Length: 113
Image (cartoon, rainbow, N blue to C red; front, side, top):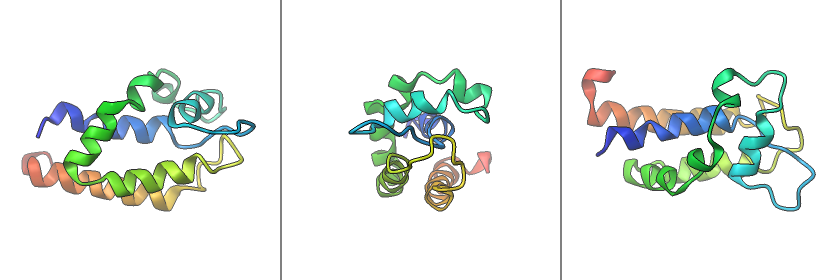
């Protein structure tokens, strides 16, 4: 497993902690872009390359580490939010996704845990 691919997933979590409203269809990329405007957005979120964060590499990495279901649940929650800056709404989904990701890293690279 390529460790570089695994670094994409945490960036996604940083970039997508909330989603914009007012669009007919909210996508990962539009949610990421909308999140940058939040008053509570970190510098990591504000500087995220949303096309990269939400691209095929993220999907491939999640499939490879076995976290696609957790990722999909998190993104589904995020893209269903009305409040672009509501950090708490998808906390359960984010925690499940992060736990899956961390377990995959620790299994592949125990020295990192």
